Length: 444
Image (cartoon, rainbow, N blue to C red; front, side):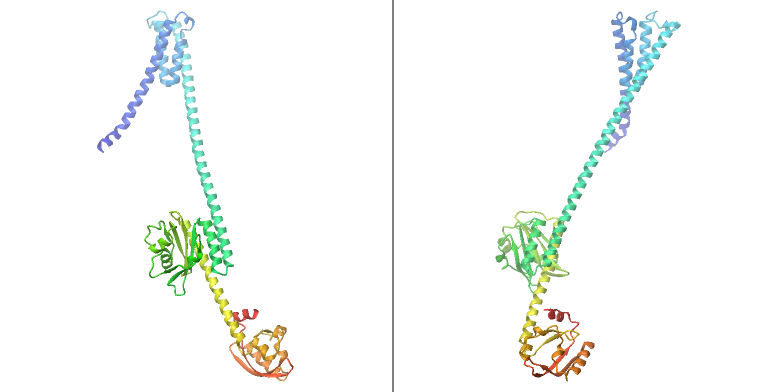
């Protein structure tokens, strides 16, 4: 650790030292360029006699171009010395500075050299700046392209997710629409399995309903296997270990990623459903009340996502509502059958009247009692067949019955038989106008 810290402290010094070496190498290269120009000029002195300084200009341009203004100025200085010493009379001396004509020549050279060096350095800097700007532009374009690519991917993902959500919403809406019209468990299960296969890609599906005591789950329907065989399935909630039992008792979904190894699966179920490798179960919840369990299975081991669990629970909730509606409809039908049986088998005539005395319904015993078919009298006033002498008192009693819903009134009166004779009857009346079930039955 101490060595690493010491190395980090020395790092700025090393960088500075490397920078000094780099600058020295630039000045050394400028000096070598001038030396090379001198050697070549000496070798080619005769051909270059009119323009002895041309190769020195090349050295100055190369030094300024590649190494900057500082090395370029060094090249100018060394070139001036070389020209003065080797080529301006008297040669091999620096005494030419004493003659104004020689100074003019050197001044022209220095001016031209400085201009060339400045232009070369400026051009080099402009090129470097342009390259740097180009590189920066490419970097920004690449960065922007990457950002746009990521944004595009995010938008595509969002569009895909929205389409998936919209598809799921449509499937769930269609399921709710179909279940609202389903009147039996088999139809409910059929709609449920179709949507589970579409949304969850399930290979199998099972619907189990609790018995009246809530102590046992009973197979109601299945897909992917023999439905009749599954309807014989029974799971004792107090004795057998099963994912459906756990989901039912804990009122939350259960995931079984590996049926063969999961301790929630009993040995009996593991053998009976050996073709299932993984499954998940959701309770059928109606509020806080559990009415059954809905399960899906797969032929391969797979992990179920939280989104899939949410969809499974939504399907189960819709199924729970539909099952309860079907049960209530079944109870209403059974109640209706019992009501009709009681009415039709009764020896007393039973009639339903509207508040304005219109006849709505007469039980079959009324036909036997008065020898007439009452269908033609439905929708007409019941007072039409009451003896004129009894009519005033009966109308008073009927008006009182309409005004006072809680009273029960009785009266004796004469009612006309089909053969024209008058039959004495005892009538008992009760106001049931506020009872919806009576209104429904009257409509039937």
